[in-house]
Image (cartoon, rainbow, N blue to C red; front, side, top):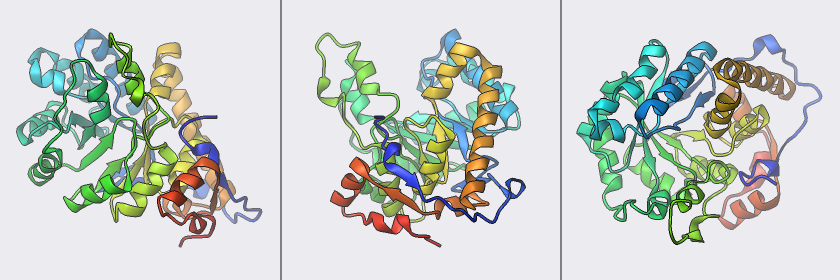
Length: 332
């Protein structure tokens, strides 16, 4: 049983879909950002060095060849050490016309955000939230005051869309409400069920901080919480998404787009960038097949197709005061 919650989501079969494969349109929007595909390569590497350079170059090649967007990992290392800039600049050099998303943590200020955007000619910037990861890191931050105010100032001061992203522990309805109150128009839920950074950081500790190893909101539940309480913000589903069916379910739960990271990175390491491109094309083809079977021509249609939510996800959402029954009806 996977931890992301997607196994609890089932589509209601449509025997008369009344559509054809050639009518399917996969384009979508994240805030003001227009994407040709609902999937993108999400933030992964952030350490700098030759290894980061090669990973970013190969991911950028895959993004350009497959025609999808890409977010880089945290650029803080390049802010601290200017010699690391090239490990991020290579993304724009490899993909000069593609949609590239910059990335910094919530400790970043306006000048740092502007610098990160300029560094790669970014079309948007992610500000990531990682309090639990920092607490688990032996040398991590322990003070998280002022993050909301800093994000608000960045939104008011940069000329590209700002996406606020969790790093694997999910966005709650309370967090979504706070974010939209300061003008955030795109939220990446980064739910529990994908890469577990608490477990990764615990490997570096002399004394394990195991209290956070199973911490977080499962991705499926987090998408619903963020959608229900994020008002008109665009929602990005991420965290343990590996297949076209996961993508379709995330969209049906309310996501406008889906970020994939760990699954794609493993494929890159094991089989190379050309195999990664082939897999991305295959996933998009399968998604179009799924949409055809459901009678949904657009991403907006897929967001309104009936699904049944059961199991732990149903229990979670019910306990959180969300009526899941409406998801089993057409929501047009």
